[in-house]
Image (cartoon, rainbow, N blue to C red; front, side, top):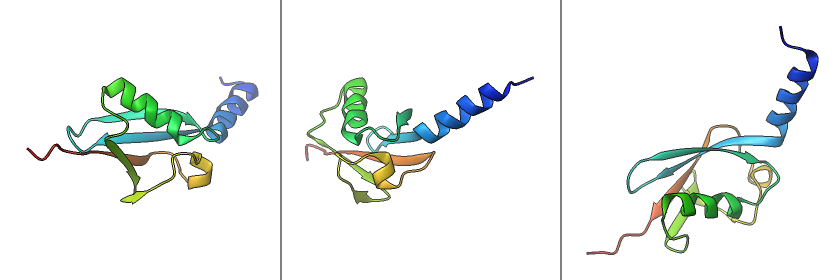
Length: 94
């Protein structure tokens, strides 16, 4: 049996956080995040680069094939649960 307080906390978490997926074009690996809707995307993207050991400066991030401002929040970008961010790693041309 679930108490009313538990449902309220779950609904509050849904309003406060968004579930996002970041997929790398190089290896196809997907990472899933639960991210605060009012935090800047730069925080998430820097963390992704740190965890995957890739250079932030050599990676482009796009949503639906379009670049976005990393100083925006998920709310400002209109992101919903399960939206995907593509991490495009520049090749060295060799």
